[in-house]
Image 1 (cartoon, rainbow, N blue to C red):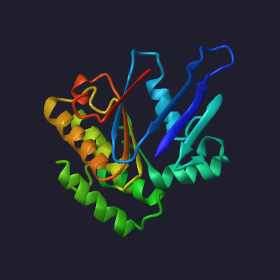
Image 2: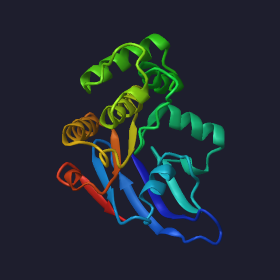
Image 3: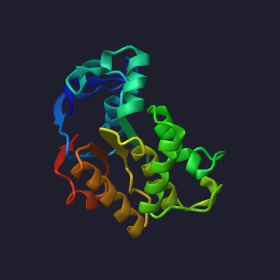
Length: 211
């Protein structure tokens, strides 16, 4: 489980405060949809839950641990091993082959190259992006890139999956694949948190948090 207690955040001392002391528990085995109009802090909340940002006030708990206040190195290790990010723009390294992009997520989590590569190939096949060896991100469509980014997040079997508008720019087929994969991850026991305007997610979500 990951939870927030009394959460508040400002990017700068003079900027608008977000969340106003928000409390919420995101449960294992459930997909939570985070909604709200632009500027309400959906993406910021994911970065706080992912231990990339530190709250201005309040607590971010991961498995009962006040993770938001840990030293940088410990937060980085916790994030690398247990938290998978799916970014809106896929955020793949254009200079490296697709397989290496996916394998990297497992290496950061402590998997061997062999183990990570084996998992990566299974995921790429399952999500329909088992492309020619050596192909790079700049040579694939946006829908394929997003599915590759999802493979990278899943390769380490994370306990927490954070997805920022994962279907925002996708065709229907790619969106359905991404949504089904996230739903399956929650059914398998992960805590899945998706920030999105996509109304298709409402029917698949177990919980909804409106900001």
